[in-house]
Image 1 (cartoon, rainbow, N blue to C red):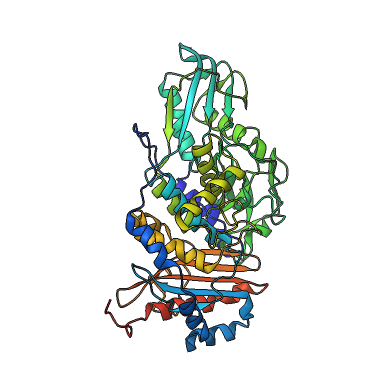
Image 2 (cartoon, rainbow, N blue to C red):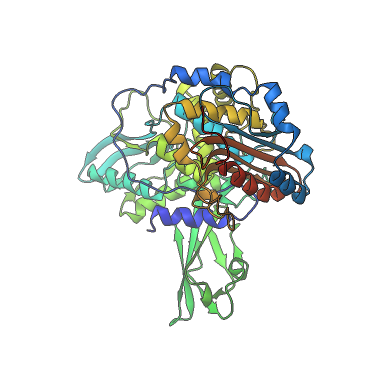
Length: 521
C-alpha cells in the first residue's frame, strides 16, 4: 500500500497546472480523542480593538488609489487587464490606524476562488479551536465469539476530512484487534451527520472524473478517488499497473506494453476507459522514458465508492464478511467500541490551504453546522459563517458565501474584507496556526513555482491562492525587509485573469522591499 504522502502527490500535484483549484493532503496516524470538551478560542481584547484599525478610512483609501507605484502600474499595464476587473490592496498589519500602502478598487465584491478557504479556516480556528479533531466511532451490534462478530459492524461518519486509505486501514486493524476476523452480518455505514442535497460531480465544469470535484460526505473515504500507478519493467517489456485503494468488484488492466519515445502526454497514450464502475481498461501503451508515474481518477460511481472501498480493504486485511456493506443508522442506545480520531484542526488546515483541497474545505465548512446545529447542512454552515462574521466584523463588507471552498461561481468578497480578516487573525491567538497553513511563496504548496526570477518573492510571503476559469486571486501576509508585516490581497475577475500573476509577483516584490519606510512607530 503506498504511503498517503505519496498518494497526495499522485492525486493532486499533477493538477496544479490546471486552471481550477484542486489538491490533497498528507496522512498521519490516529490520535487520542481529547476527554475534555472543546471550547472556541477566545479572541483577546486587542483583536477587537484592531478591527477598528483594520477598517480602511475613506481618505486613506482614496489617497492610495490615486496613483499606483510605477512598477505596479507598469505591470498592470503590461497585463492588459482592464482596471475595473482588478482589485488590489496592501496594508500594514498591527495595532493603530494606518492608511493602506496601495489600494485599487478595494471595496469591490469579487469572486475569490479558493482564497475563500482563508475565511473558512479562520472561522474554524475561532469557533472550533486549533486542537479540534473529528472522531469516527465504530459500533459492534452483536457479541464476538471465536473470532466472529455475531451481528453487524457499524461505522458512523462525522465529517472527518482525512479518513484516507491509511487511516481506514488502521480503523479496520483496530476492529481486528477486538478479536474479530469474520463478521456474520453486515458492515453498516451511518452518514446521517450531514444532510446534503443531491449533487452531480459534473455540475461545476463538466469534469465528473476529476478529483477536485469530489463531493463532501459525512463518511468521506479517501476523497472518493483512485490512483493508477504505472511501474515500467523493461525486462518484461510492460508497465505494471497498480490500483489503490482496492475497490470490491472493480477490475483493471494489470499491465500495458512499453513503447519508445519521449514521455510527453502519456495519459492520452494509455487510451484509458474509466466510465465503467466495474472495469478500468487501458488500451494503449506507456513510454519507458516516463519512469514510474501515478494518475489520479475520481471513481465513475461515487455513491458506491465508500462501500466498495471498505469491503475491498476489509478483504485485503484478511477479514471475511457474511453479509454486505450497506447504508444504515446506529441503533439507539448502542455505545461505540472505539473511535478513530483525526489529526487536529491546526494540521488539517495546512492541507486545506497549502494545497487548496476543495472537498476538505467543504467538510470543514459543514462541520461548523454539525457542531452548532447538530447536523451538517450547507444552509446551516452559511448561517454559522454569517453569524461569525457579524460577531467579529459587524455588517460591513460581509462576504457572499456558497460552499466554503471557493469552487463556486457565486461566492463574492472584497479585498478590504479579506484584509480585515487578516488584520484580526494577526492579532489573535491562533495567528501562528493560520500563517503556517498558507503556502510560502516560491517554496511550497500552490505557491511553489512562484517567484522564478524574482529574488524578493521567494520566501517573502505566506499567501492563499485561488484560480478558476476567469478568476485569479491571492491573499495573505508579506514579510517586509524592514521587519514590518503586510496584508496583501490581489483579485482579478476577467477571461484573461491569469495575466494577473506577473502583477502579483511584482506586488509581492514591491511590498517586501520596504527598507525605505521609516521604522518609527
